[in-house]
Length: 439
Image 1: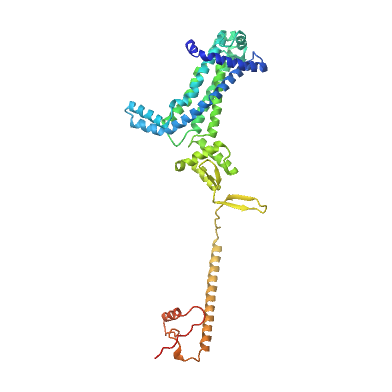
Image 2: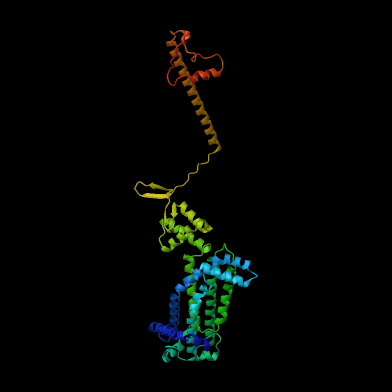
């Protein structure tokens, strides 16, 4: 451990200085020799480090998403060159270069905070052995050795003997109970963080070896924390428990507001977004516009959750635009109340009511009666037309019989003659007789 401590000695002084600065603030509130002052100083150190690592965490999310997208292509390369490991590695590196991804990007936050972790371990180990480290002088060292968290000293370990624990002013039972509880909480938080990543934020439509590896890590990491945790001082356990809780909360926020496409978290997010957009009629936050813009840009490549989101907007009379905004659709019905307030809503298709058998029979009877009345009216109009023609013929009875045109003389028998006579008549009013033929 001395070799590792010497490697990270360049950061030991800054870490000890940050702890002392926070201790000076909390010491005025809780007392300089209390466990609250030193414990909260360690917690504040974790929060400060994690805030500085947020850009790396964003890169980690993007790298993980990119690796999930490349899993089908990686599987094809592995199957194609399964007998040629060198060619397989070359094709993998070529795929990473073309897509702009780096597998090590997902490990950046852990690698970046490792120096701080070992520096803190070295500082707490110096407190346990009674040696000054960095800016921690003799007075601060004595104050830190008196600090206890729930009865356990900051520098005590689960594996320490009773004599060493008594030298720090505590009992072995208190130290082992506190350290055991903190190790269980640390492992449980790590397990829950990995589990929510696998159950909520993984694309369930793609089955790849990457998912199997993540499932394995979900059980391996908690066991590793439990095994190594028994050799960590209480102060380091406070550090690691705080960073696990921070990671869990940070990941919950990312899963809720920026889920992986095709995951259960995306289905829940789009359901909430649908209710929000249909209620307000627009996207209000920048993150919402980014999600809608990405969905519109996919076109036919949308998954089932994204298609359901677009269909829900269409039913509500809204349309998603390419820039991520939402506008009212053309098929939206607009109504205006008596107060002059315009009320908009999607036009609904009216379905005809189903009639009973008696209603259908009564309707058929009524239709038959209407057709009979229409036919009787037609007969009456035909009779009146015939009477008018008869009157006209009587008025012109003084003309010679042979002067009547042949077209008006109905031939004997047959309906063809009648139809030919009617087709030769002029429209409207009595027909003018043709001049008699000259013999």
